[in-house]
Length: 288
Image (cartoon, rainbow, N blue to C red; front, top):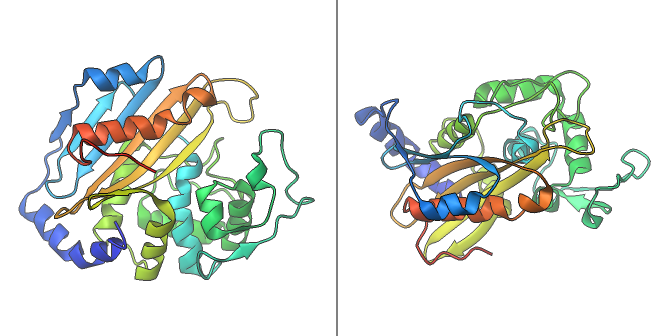
């Protein structure tokens, strides 16, 4: 997208002209039929949706309803990072915050890496919840609502007094298709976002670079029954691919699994396999 998202700002007008000249029909979506992908799914449920930004064509796989909204969990860090930079709450990705143990006491499930000071870049990379809760407090609910309205991001729900509104419960939700629509519009240059903010997002979200192809994405996961110690987990892998001579492909994977181990690596592995299947990534792709 963005070092190539500088590519986004460059191709925005061309993209819009292309879409207007070749309007995408509602049924211009191909079902991905692959025994290899089906074998990867196992006992999980999966909903995968991707869009080729050159043709506008969509690709889908799985039994999950692509219109059903779910909590975005840490995939919300994609718009959240942009909002933090655009509002000046974080002047750049090196913006550091100290971990306040009294304000954010560590919970039993916290990884060790959360229990230290972080920058915006490392908080994005390691999905550090306390950092983004502090960002949310500084940004404020009204400003978030303005941005989510501009982004047409899911149900745009930001309750007053919540600094964790993307983490389940009766709050912000978004569907796999809406995740893809948001990234499509971001690529098209539809939002008033500074080029340096887009470049920052590209830099911190890069997961692989090979033969002119770049994969950028963010994971997300949480329990469907918010606050429950046990229960089904839902997870995401949301992002985009830039390829040589192409506007790229945007995608969203939503999945459920019985435990985090069954989800952790699966999200990226399945998404990469699906992107190879539709030709968005080369057949010999190996991510970081």
